[in-house]
Image (tube, rainbow, N blue to C red; front, side, top):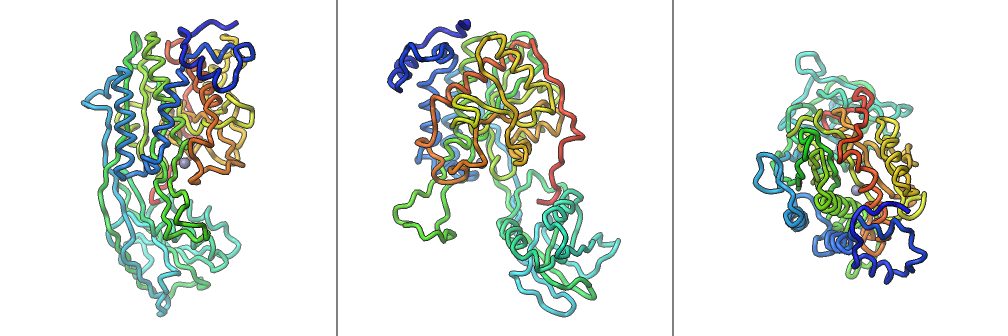
Length: 462
Ligand SMILES: [Zn+2]
């Protein structure tokens, strides 16, 4: 029998029984209840509700989620970040959208549908390829790997004029759409541009390119609560999740023929990532009640994960990453993983010693639980959430998830709603996180740092 982590909570037991579990068949871990199933359910139900219209960045709806999380942090008794009066860490980002783009190439005017631009500059006017203006030209031929080539230019930064062979028309169209939506940047420190033209020309005899962008500042808000450490307060354990999602479907751009009059249009993001946001709120409550944290615990609900991870990027610039002992980023834990209900896996397991330390804790507590290795390495999930930002700074920063991303019918769909979740499975995952990370909290374990040289950098332009 495992030791009880906390006093048994009657409410959760009643719910578990109502959910169809008999007391005798219920594994003991379920009623050790570090985490209240009641409160967890209330939180995820609200965050994933239609009232929040999919929690889109820059919308008034995401503020409702921000206020809710703030209120929970306040009720729990967390402190704001040093230097802030509230839990809201507000910052601005810059939106840069293409406004004008015209090109004549070898004395021929090129149609707008053959042009694409990603630029962090207000205006470009290129007539020559030379050292002085810093413009470089490239040809992507039919046999080249288009996205690899563009990605290299993005990593390098600078000014690039690219002739893309028409064999890549489809992929070109995707990039064009993406760039047309505009770029969001934390700052405009890097001045660069990639302009692509879809053409079978491979020689540039003459050209005249003019591009202009519209630049607008917008604000975003992370919600951060702090539980100060009792004895190692300089050392930080960060629990995080993102609370933004995709908002409401733009029906004008839909051509699936569905009945738009009645169709569900709200991206509720119950799994992505109301589930993770709910987890950090309830872990905050658990560790506050427990009160034995040697280290400082930070609970951060990040904005803007879905549009490029700007919340975590800004957050990471406001502290010394060396102080962060570990980052437990929780992403999509609302449904059973391929390893079964109540199980989870973590990304980048081989990059630090965190996985083995957490599993040692689960074993010592005789839980029969295990944190698995990411079963979808080909999906590059290590880079697809906020953990990557802190990993680039050396923090043992990993995402914990249970999504079956290879066959999840609800991923980034309007059907990612409360009804698609398995709340008992989700509860078990949060329980497992509360148990496995105890050593981080009490200061008895310290994972190895991530090798920053093995973490891919962000692109400079888009
Ligand atoms: Zn997402």
